[in-house]
Image (cartoon, rainbow, N blue to C red; front, side, top):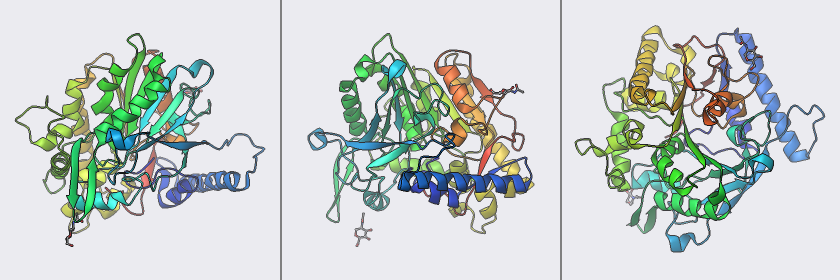
Length: 438
Ligand SMILES: *[C@@H]1O[C@H](CO)[C@@H](O)[C@H](O)[C@H]1NC(C)=O
Ligand SMILES: *[C@@H]1O[C@H](CO)[C@@H](O)[C@H](O)[C@H]1NC(C)=O
């Protein structure tokens, strides 16, 4: 579950991440939670062993995920499709096979946003702003897994993970900015177009089915680009979109401030996005146009909203930002929902109600789907444990993978709303040592 600003999976990253983020199951005795965490570490170790010693495990239940190489966009310079630092953007492509050869699943990576030159400058020196730092190979897990038992409906599709290096959800398109001798490139829109262009030529133009997905800032990008994606594909193809953990809310925080709105206003100003959202109501502040609640009003193609009601990133940064909690009274609760007081839980229930109000319009759209579980997590489609496993979170006894698959293939209408926390014992609630970075 790629936290917005921490490195996405590489061979060794999952272990350190799992060490830091102890997943804990609610509704069970503490001992069960501890056992689960230990089991997770053991699984991580097992994977490491198989990577570094090429040990073939004879208990074939744990199959190590495929490692997929990075492809840099060709002619990026001429196309002006560049990461924040001017390097070429990239993506990882794993070819499909058999019945999946003409089906394409695209995943837009997330990783927060940068609101000013200073924060964008530090991104330029990281995987989120420069392909010079990106892993040359990454693991494909969850919705990207090629293992049928982990990814029953999409395992044999062509799958692509597009790396995020523009700082504004693949949306900006402005000229270079020069500051203190450093060049900044805000070209997310061109990155989107250049990668799509390459994929179309690599076979996507003949797709019979296509699925645009993304998580966090990539989930927001999925809302933003869903209709453009549809337009690239054959008219008779089945094309849908899945936004995971991307429904960011324009809420008042615990101090009554619109922290997210001012954050988004900065991003919109910095990357000149107001023009991109020309159909956004002109009475709104520029930052408001970047919220999914506004973006979805204009989407025609069917979208699936996968979001936890207590999105851990949003609880930490939209609802209880540090700047609005000078006495650190939220310190424990924002790291671990099990440590919230009853007053704090009331506020979290209010946040859940705001999410339901914000998606009330799309609830009416017949061909849209949603799955709002009452877990304290962020991004559930990329992790095998939360996407589909014997112990994955369930709503009405359906894993996320089953619900998304049922919806994509029109096997049934999927509009799953979970009951209020702490009702769902199947959640994998995160417990943090420190908050997600922006
Ligand atoms: C530019 O330099 C000034 C002075 O050294 C510094 O305060 C500022 O943060 C720098 N700006 C950026 C975007 O790095
Ligand atoms: C829940 O789903 C599982 C697997 O899909 C099934 O084996 C089980 O019987 C279901 N449980 C209930 C209570 O329906």
